[in-house]
Image (tube, rainbow, N blue to C red):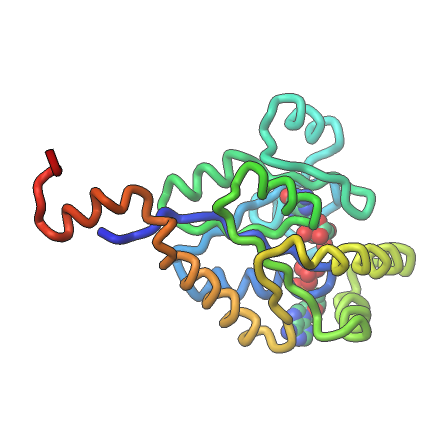
Length: 210
Ligand code: ADP
Ligand code: 5GP
């Protein structure tokens, strides 16, 4: 009876900090977590599947989606367009599940306006050296793209105070534990229960209170 409405959980992190890895691990831990698949004009990496990792669109398709009001937010990140589809968020929430999403800092700030009850988490690596190490190790970016991502990381980390929670991704399982803890605590907030007077009356077996 005292069960809170589900909400969006926005994880923002500099490229290479490990958000894809951490979110992937979280999805395997709890069947109430569901991933909001974004659209992007970035070309797919070798291991990426259309509809699972992203909806890969060309610019014309993406812009048609923007014009048609399909995006809850969108932004140009590292030279490509990325956007959150309203249909993804609405579908997952309607199914009674938490929406895990991975968007850049601007996307997170803009979502906060439409989803003020969302939870906004910044995930960071233990250090900038480790970030470079992880990005190089992933081997998906050429030198120029790598520099751009490392440079953009500085501006992203500087916006830390715009987030509700800071999670350091030192060890993957620990980072997942921290995010699970945040979601668990947030879902117990009395403010998420809606009309508490009605719930209390029902719980205490009282009439409708006329
Ligand atoms: P992002 O989605 O934030 O760009 P990824 O999840 O692709 O980052 O992770 C970047 C690289 O760092 C990957 O090779 C991944 O395996 C590695 N990685 C992620 N988390 C950790 C961690 N806690 N410790 C060590 N390596 C990590
Ligand atoms: P990548 O190319 O490494 O998958 O992602 C690059 C950046 O785009 C990351 O910072 C990621 O958070 C961001 N991103 C992914 N999806 C979205 C989205 O739907 N909206 C916004 N604004 N950023 C996104």
